[in-house]
Amino acid sequence: MIAFVSGPVAALAPDAAVIEVGGIGMSVLCTPGTLAGLRTGQQARLSTSLIVREDSLTLYGFADDDERLVFELLQTVSGVGPRLAQTMLAVHSPDALRVAVATGDEKALTAVPGVGKKGAQRLLLELKDRLGEPVGPGAQRGIGSAVSASWRDQLHAALIGLGYATREADEAVSAVAPQAEAELAEGGTPNVSALLRAALQTLNRTR
Image (cartoon, rainbow, N blue to C red; front, side):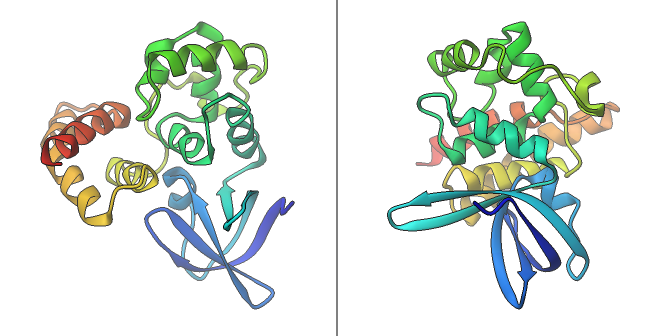
């Protein structure tokens, strides 16, 4: 298992970073919050989780070991793969997920695209007493509050992670921009989980 990668950031994309390790560029899929802390040319250290499939090797990267731990625990739930686990972490911070599971907040979990009512109930049942208590500064944040990346970056990366093309993600972000800008104008913070739901509705209408 590759536990972490360390080296200069060679390139950044909406859903991934390329880290140069020993002269080799390693492509690492990351959440928007993790990508927001990286800068091209600067040194970075990402905790990683290697997903091995018959036809692929995919490396997922995280800002710290705690995010990686939650990512791996989420996948122990039946029906949750790495893409969905990453999408959950794009919408909710690790501590926000801990709060949701600890309080039985089914609504917070179904705010994640790809998680329905039965899936949320399964998450609550199978993760009970396994995620532990909130551990970081984000413990006081509300469910679904924004992480460090802008709402546009978070939303775009989540849509790409769900398999939509870049063009479709761009159009969906533009479609919900007025909703986000209205919240900002009122002094609030755009709720990315709500924007994701709205964006998916616009995509479903155009298909």
